[in-house]
Image (cartoon, rainbow, N blue to C red; front, side):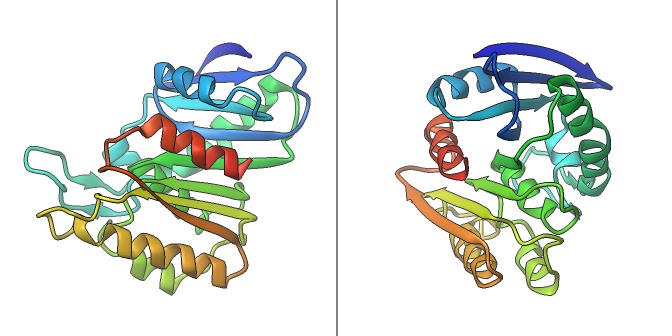
Length: 222
């Protein structure tokens, strides 16, 4: 698997692909290049190009609407997902695929934590991605479950993967404590709409074995 780094505007993009890649799936994630390199080793043999997008302000650009901070000392959420999603679909993805020289058989958008929330939100704002992964996704986010009930995805996805740690709902923070309930509800809602879905619980809390959880979900999506 070869590694290539390109700059698109202020974003740093790392692409992992096989030398003979000419079609197949392209898997977009928001993470640092070093983290993607670790993940790529766990995905050896998976028939997909891996694209890591870095230099993104998670709290500002991956949150669907403004909300108060979740942790003391943290930052408020800026609600810039729509503006960033426009950049992703109109600038970043076309540039990556022009560089690769092919259109994929499917585009997969997946992510961990707030990036998992963003991936799910994208279904309701663009038809660019046909498979989505929300791994330990921040589906506790204020108003997100109500948003899903009130709106329809722009495309019914082929597959949607959900997972959480089995201790993520155990918290004194009441906002975060609904994460498992809302994740199960989200999975059931998309299944009712016709998507193939799965929800899995993994041992531990939010910060346990992120690379392993991501690899598990991405293998199912591909």
